[in-house]
Amino acid sequence: MKRRLDRLGLALARRLRGGGVSVSEDPLVLTSAAGYRLAATVFRPAGSLPSPAVVMFPGADHDRRAFYCGQTPMGAAEVAALGFVVVIFDPSGRGESWGPEDYGGAEHQDGVVTAVQWLREQSSVDPSRVGLVGISLGVASVIGGARVLAEKGEPVRWVIDWEGPCDQRTITANQSMGAPAMGHRSDDTAYWAPREAVRHVPHIDCGYWRLQADPDHAQPGELAHALAMMRAASSAALPWFQLNTHHRGTLPSAPKWLKPGPFAANRDLRRTLASLVR
Image (cartoon, rainbow, N blue to C red; front, top):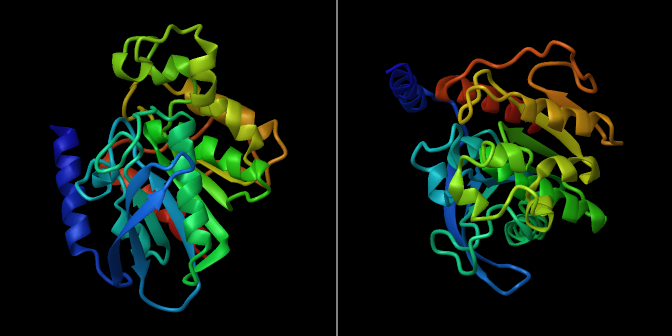
């Protein structure tokens, strides 16, 4: 009941919220490195150009419709209204896109790379200010994509990770969640390693911001995944890293977790993105 009321409150806040930038929306078709057609949408804010930009990747087995219908704590149009050019797309094997379902593997990471490269070619975008947002299970795709871009010498500006599971244990909730595992054993390193964000985050060569509430939206007893990502980020030579509202570059011994629920998550994502649009 509390969660339902929280969602109703968020829906009302979205309806009443005013003063934002007007946003245009256009269909887009991307082509992955493997030649797959990726159905996408681009949102552009009105106003001065060029703008910062962001690629948003949904969680679970969702496609870009999740950023319209409230399945994610922050919609694409909301992000664009903050001043970003935003691209959302159906990952391969989902929605209207071609190719295989890859559960955060190399194919989905390539989709992120493809979207970033397209944005950087647009006159409306400042190519030096492109970031990524990963929602929950989308973390493997955005962190993995950020690593690919960094290794090409084309790093993004920053990555926001909203409560993403970081390794095989947390992706599958100790092998209790069947779909992401797809029958792969916990010791199948060849399958899991590319999908474990904690392995990639030291190599992204950009800012990293983890947003984490207690309890977690999907696994109420799980906070170790957030701490693992922060330890990996803090041990690397990243430009900066941050957990929630703590100071950048600090790894707190007693973290201040965010409040749970869709309304709080929307507020925290808005505040975070608004601080990065400048």
